[in-house]
Image (cartoon, rainbow, N blue to C red; front, side, top):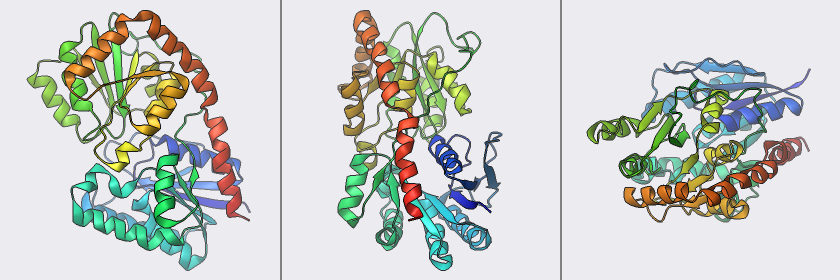
Length: 372
């Protein structure tokens, strides 16, 4: 009978590329895989090569959600046949850790971000302190820990004196048989397209300023694909500033459909603000998605993002987050066609070196070490 791994997340599974890749890698390593999360009203259909388990919860936000989720996850893991528990982020760790101790099961913890410094927690000291309590109680006892980049790994290593493995959010090589046209995707054929995508289009990601910048950019549209806390505010800005002809909103969508949109864009935005440690040291999925879609990147000068852009010369930087500064930068990018083509060409080399096929080896090493 093959070994079984249960992969735990608090989202609805459909758009979490990192965890999907984790599940596929576990399959390669000989595990039966169950990914468990929750079912939301807007959850997309999802039929991967591994088993999924999505449950409706009574609560979907706030402290009651996290309490209900961890209680239900605890009892599921307590009685399920499992050899390896794979916990993603601090909000799944309490239940996963306690069960791994009770049942003496192997546990891998994957921290997708510097969780306790997320902007949603920084201004809420009691809630932040609660999550920090869980982290400090559990983290020193963990044996197998992964995170998304070296900056966050260094922060955790310094605080807890633990070995942290890095597995970056790099997509697999993807060569679709057909690339849909802009017309087929209902996108303008005669304008430049800036794209901002993600499942976490939240506060301090620069989205509001990007929308306002479109007031000063001609012959271009901003395509916003995904979801997040600031989407309602962005729609309000668009209405107030009468920018409906310059902003296109599209909901979250499956990876293959999203990639079709990204490949039709001209410039990808990664303009997070340096307002907290989590954003300062972020290395977002969308940066690599833009690279793999052969489009240059416009970014903030945050250290991990800057390392990638500078190494491969695949993008540009905004001087600050004022809408006028963003607009002036974008206008200059498109005016200098020769430079733009050089930067675009450089994405070819970058995506060859920055592939999941190479990055996955780091994850396989961690998985194999669990059994030693």
